[in-house]
Amino acid sequence: MFRLVFAPLRWALGILSSLVGLGALYGGVTFTQIWLTGRHHSRASADAIMVFGTAEDNGVPSPELRDRLNVALHLYDTKRAPWVVVTGGNRPGDRFTEAGVSATYLEAHGVPAGHIIVGSGDDTWQNVSSVVGAMSLHHLRTVLTVTDPFHEYRAGAIASSQGLVPLSVPVSQSATSGPGLWRFYLKETLEVSVGRLVGYGRLSSWTQSHHVTLPLLGPTN
Image 1: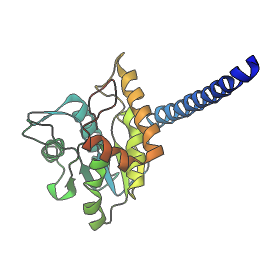
Image 2: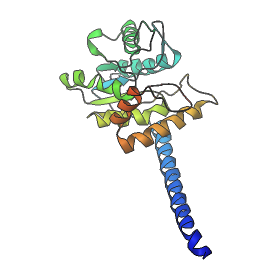
Image 3: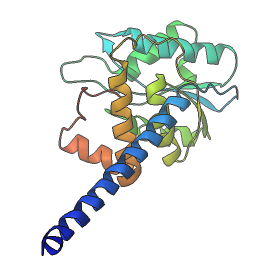
């Protein structure tokens, strides 16, 4: 009789245990992909350099954004690509956009305004979707994606899902460092894990419409 009572419970626990194990494996593989991509630097040339936006301070690039822009400047100056694409919107109360601040910085350091495409966007999906139209007009498809190492995998995956061919060039020495860096990797692992299952565009629409951010961190591109 006890077997009849506990058999369904054992069966349910077995299923639950298998699901937890599969979830842990999926998360582990995803984390590994993110980690490895953030350490791969493409040496190829491309049609354009795409800089993913992050915080600015009243018209001045934050240390994190400046690091990304300096990588883009090096790529441009060494003729790895003839165009630079900048992205990123602004937060409530900001007078400037991340993309606008980025464009101003690049122009001040010698990149002609006519070779800069300025986008917008409050997350990575929107960053890419804000510029693909203008890029298509100029026949720009291959892109050197410049962002922090923990963000490189998702940035490339989203660029690829919108028809671009991404080549990773993560920032080697980022201002985002220290003991708290694991939180960024955890956030990226969650976002990539969910995004691959439901679609990055759908995830972006849902989080933006419901004003949702994943745990542990506020919004980062």
